[in-house]
Length: 125
Length: 184
Image 1: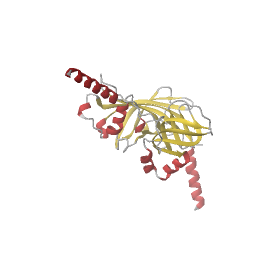
Image 2: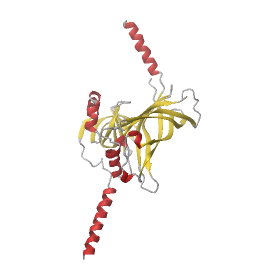
Image 3: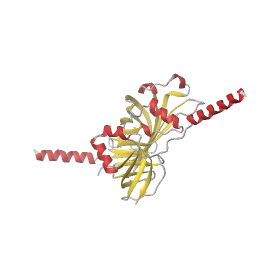
């Protein structure tokens, strides 16, 4: 009887341990966005205060609405200021108004752009 | 006075617009600190910004540390929290120069050397003689290469418990496809 209990506990520990070590990646698609903001507003925030803004948004899931100014296979740019890396290719048109959800990874001071990865389009007209 | 200023501004504008700039926002950088026969310790970043001034070979690259993706989510978390401190140091940069770039005709598979300074985890290190494979087509210049750094150069400590699994010698490889972006 005692042996069985020890065995069961061991199995539980192994399962928990395995799930901890091989846990899933965070899923930005399903996460609730911490901030929702327009592309123009957020670029203004970064223009005025790059350091504190970067701290505020770093690694957060945010939704950004704006005008598409450039599209490539796996990325798009909103209002020439917000650069989004898409998880998968999604159709959109230049000059269309869209809303994108993604994770903020940093402010690119070489190009003065806000960079997001793991993005997907959640709404477009 | 105003007239002089006008000419100075005009002159600056002309010199700026004469620069031949090549640019990418989606370059790839991999770093690997794997040890043989253990799970690979490898991060891939596909959103590297890099700019090359084709007139003088000046080169700059910017990487967001949070943008490194790992196969294993826990490894990614540990990388960000315990090793790279990406909350305090979200950026890694490289600034340098490709030697003899402007005078080189850039035939297919040209090999040149890149010298520069890598800043990561708040520490900077001069890295010279990175071998670059350069290919130029009509509108793009591709730069491919790799180099090695030590974790200790950037004040990153590898705990004793994992020292068999995480190499202190780190290989960084990059593949950048820079597109002509000359200011007109």
